[in-house]
Length: 177
Image (cartoon, rainbow, N blue to C red; front, top):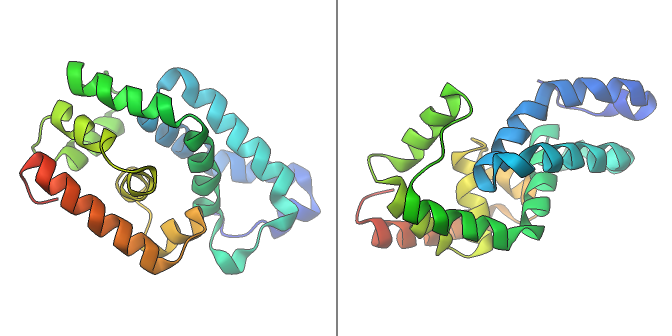
């Protein structure tokens, strides 16, 4: 896994290694949060922004992976209404067909035996910050430190948002999350 952009800053053609290493993961993350139709565009925009900002990347604040997830999450935030509509639609109709077997494993893991409709309604009821933290942990499999770096917030903020979100999800779903 690429942990530094040093070579990519000096040689922009080497940025392709960052793209190759992380594009599919970022595309799946965006697709899970919004829709597969927009995932390609936002994933590509994530890497365009990363390429343009590669000179200001600060490895002391975290690795490339959380930095990319942070960019993607900010772009998703601009499409927040679409995300909430998606969760409300899923709450009514159920999940879309997964685009690969890995997606189904993630959905199964997050759902933890709870119906997707109920989970989607509960996710739609979270604040943006709470939803971002939950989904970066669940879909992106980021650590608290990586989530903090991705969102540009303190570790304690991640922990408190996740705690609040778990309480809300537990109340909405009637299960331990």
